[in-house]
Image 1 (cartoon, one colour):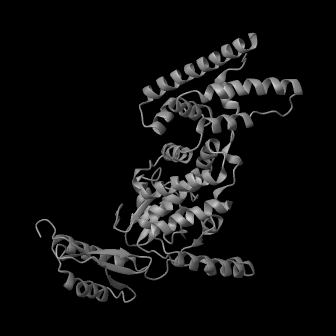
Image 2 (spheres, rainbow over the protein chains, first blue to last red):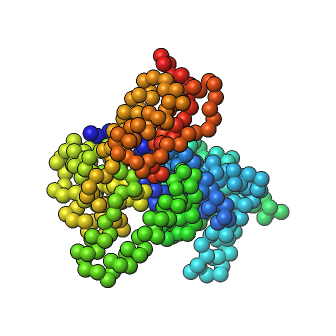
Image 3 (tube, rainbow over the protein chains, first blue to last red):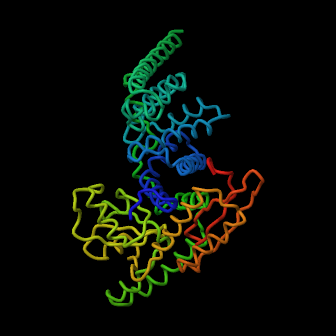
Length: 187
Length: 242
């Protein structure tokens, strides 16, 4: 006799969960480390994410790629919670500044790049939170609009539009910053 | 003035460009601690799991100084949970699974699944091997011999004798049918369950009474826990039509 679902499916669910855990743990940890510079906070968010995944395992997509996007969605909430109470924009700007690559560059170029990075980071920090979120999903996780849609819980079309608008606003923010710097220099 | 594309810049300052540079979860203490916590959250008996681990360490040590044939015999063991089988698509612990709850020989059960085409082209691989997974259930993998289990870090399953699944699954079916179809008074439940266990020769199972009895829950339902070999009697309201 074969039954595909029985009253005692617990062990099998655990087996499937462990598969998911081992397949996605590093990606989820990387996702949180990119957004939270503090390793302990990142570990906490990863922990919460997988606990939620276990408790709602029936909602986790069976497809591994889709499951990872589902985990990113949960982790994104965790990151936002972890950032609550912090001076978020300043924190993120500082984080971006410190991650600018400076190796193999001569001194003059490093200074120039630091200035440029500073203005880009400042412009990025002026963006609305939704814009920053979608830009980072695209730039850091390399997600396409359809995948971003899964993380944000919107349609693919809406994700594509929001991404496009966010990129435009980012460029505008950089231009505005440049103009302000020129005015400052001319004084 | 900025000369770089802002989006390219954002991409270039990714603090963790590649997750494969991070510690693998199997060797990351934080990951292992998290997994253990989730197992606790899930209600898995840690005492039981630790027992399995303690068992494995000395057995592996013995195997190292015995012949291959002897090692194969020593390493095989019974499944902790004989009521379930996981049929794997490939000889890989991360491969897709079709899960079964049923009685009978695990390899025959998974052979049936392969023949339905659910795991790949029918009739499937020429040979299947049964191993005991970390969760204590039997996993059946494609493979010519039980080396596949050892390669995956698992024990070959000892399928000799009565797995016990037939008996407990049959008891489970009979009790479920009765307790769902009518309101079995809570006071009568223990006697009925013990009678079924006795008839099936399952004298190593125990019956546990749950708390939370109340006048509005005069009937009984049953919950099986294979890990502790216990059946819990749970008070429930009168079923519709009962």
